[in-house]
Structure formats: structure tokens, C-alpha cells
Image (tube, rainbow over all chains, first blue to last red; front, side, top):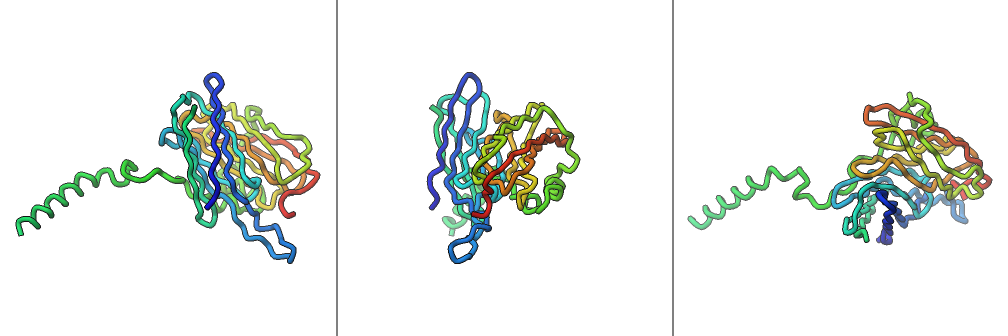
Length: 103
Length: 157
């Protein structure tokens, strides 16, 4: 099972910074081990962020996103007590979702 | 017998009552991941093919997309890039690294209170031009460029 998604929301004035860390190997399929065998591709393909159950960000990724992808977004008008949910799915069908309450 | 008939009727009624909600998402569990991964665009091997598959072959160059990135990235495995679109009604941002084996890195769609901004860490194979494509609500594409020098490639290893 994949590790927990870390979600941080920090509001300054009207705008909230949302930082998301999804722990994932993001293998490109090009890296080789000592024997010259390629590690198979393993990467997050889609993710979404929802605010109080409503999707606000839909993302699609390639293998060229760094290992343990860290994203930052901005949104307006997020309040204390709002719920932010992040969910991702990778090319092998693994998925993970986590939620946080804005403080 | 009567008992059975009662149960049937009851079952029928409740199914009929609920059916309008099925498919509206009201009864569905938390919605996971809407759009299908855009395989054609992501697996395209040249930037022109990737742009075409993404539907942005005819993008207008714009100064209203701001790309912040290091001029020289020492480690191509983690190059932090942030993109802001100041074009009104921007609905999505996509990032391409021209010389990466598969140039399209990421495509993000924004709705509701989300602002057209993203900060992301890319792997870059070599020194290359990065382009950010913003699509607006009218379906038009806008593009901005930025050259990033890479001293150590981040794809193989």
C-alpha cells in the first residue's frame, strides 16, 4: 500500500497555497539495475484534488515527474474547516486517497 | 404469498425512487479521477506530436504565462518549475520539455476556486526548452517558452 498523501493548506489573505506530496517511485522504465535490467515503468497517471467533495483540480502526469511528486496549487476563498481530498491512480492500477481539514 | 407480494412491491418502489439518482453521483462513492489518461499526448515522442495530440498545435505565443525555473539545473532528476497564467479564463496548464523522450510532462485542469498556477518538479533528460501551454475556456491555446540548462540528466541513472 502506498504511503499517505501529505496535504498542507496555508492561507494568506484570500489565496490559499495547497501543497501536496504524493509518495511514489515514479519509475520511468529507463532506469537499469546492476544487471542491466530495466525497472518497469511505474508512475502516477492521474490525480485529483477536491474541495468539500467538489473537484477543483484534475491532473495527468507522465513518467517525467520527479520521484515522490510535490505539487503546489493556489485557490481562492478556502476557509477553515473546508475539506481537501487528494486521490491518485498509477499505471498499475494502484490508488490512494487522503483527506485533510483546513485549519 | 401476500407477504411475498408485499415485499416485491416494496422492492419495486424503492428501486424506482432511487433510480434517478444512480449515475448522478449522489449515491456513488467519492468520485475518483475523472478524465482518462491522455495516452496519445503523453506517449508522443516529439514535441510537435505531443502538442498535436494535446490539441494545442496552433498555440499563440503569450507574455501572460509566466514560467519560473532555474536557468541552470544541476540535477535533472528534480527541476522545480512554477507556472502562472494571467490569461483570463485559463482552464488548464500543460508542461512540455522539448527534448525529453516523451515531451509532455503534465497536464492540469482547474475549476471552481482553483487558480491557474502550478508548481511541479520535473525530470529532464538534457538541456532543453520547456514550454507551458494554457488553454482558455474558448478552446484557444497560448504558449510560453523557457530554456533550462541541465548539467546532469535525470531520466536514466
